[in-house]
Length: 189
Length: 189
DNA sequence: CCCTGAAGTGTTATATTATATCGTTTTTGT
DNA sequence: ACAAAAACGATATAATATAACACTTCAGGG
Ligand SMILES: [Zn+2]
Ligand SMILES: [Zn+2]
Ligand SMILES: [Zn+2]
Ligand SMILES: [Zn+2]
Image (cartoon, rainbow over all chains, first blue to last red; front, side, top):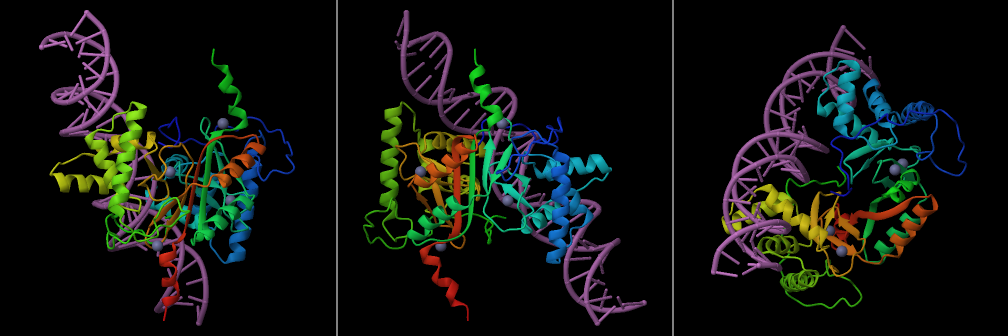
């Protein structure tokens, strides 16, 4: 597989530890800082509601629930994990198409992204603009951060154009170690 | 899905038309030019044999066969398509693990690449060096070309490093229209 | 040469991810 | 209220990938 340690199932909600609010000024998101993530989620849901209203799209209860489940983690979450949570929390035996249809809608509205190397989904921090994401995926803890600086994307597309290729969409995923997981590398006795 | 028209099955060997040899000087490969592809394949197999010998790795008949089937197309080919061809050509009812093990070996040896957005595999043009590929995937004909200019990759990793992320592997796939398929866009009556 | 351990392969079963299809319900616009 | 469209529930199935175990092949040492 692409990443080294393939857990049997992607998990969410495992960093809801501290609620200290640290303002990391110039960063697009706070994937690496321990923060009040529930407020992240609330804001994301509010923004999504507003955006869909503006666009004349229907953010139904089901779609909102899926969006919330996706947002609840800084780690990409698999469709079947969402399915399991929906079935557990609400005693609804949801079927795959239910989740996939919601995910498709959210992807179309740019409210979430799909991480191809993990077959998983993650909330988008800047859903108001259609953009090409650059994703930094930690091979150890799977925390994934989206960079929105699109200069590199432009360069890539420029180079593609130089070869006569007409680029329409780019997929950039970088695997490695997030700041939190790097010290763990030096712990080997 | 990531690409617009998802054919039910990826296909190979559908551009073995002309054998005109056109030297496109500065290009790493000839995905877009009509050329004697069978000679491409031969060279790739020879080089693979040599590289494995140098590395003390065993390019067995099975692995070589899979490599040839992958190389036979400029389009990424799915594992189950390889499986079907193996079963057809040699009256061997091969099972999935047979193909996946060969693919894993070829991936480890950098003789092929996996295209995540297609769940498919394609031969590498420069297997002697470990590198990060940039893939240009045509949404119409699926012809996929690998760029080896790694400056952009370096920039991406640099930007990742600026955020404290220690990058180890990058995945860059750009979808769009290859030169051959672009005129088709203007044919709409 | 023969033994032996490691690597490779065959085979069966199963896991994981995603879609097709159809019928019902809900919403929207008139 | 009515009709059309969109969303949803439900069942089945497709597509991709791996687990587990037995058997074969091969390299290397005696
Ligand atoms: Zn985004
Ligand atoms: Zn990490
Ligand atoms: Zn390559
Ligand atoms: Zn094309």
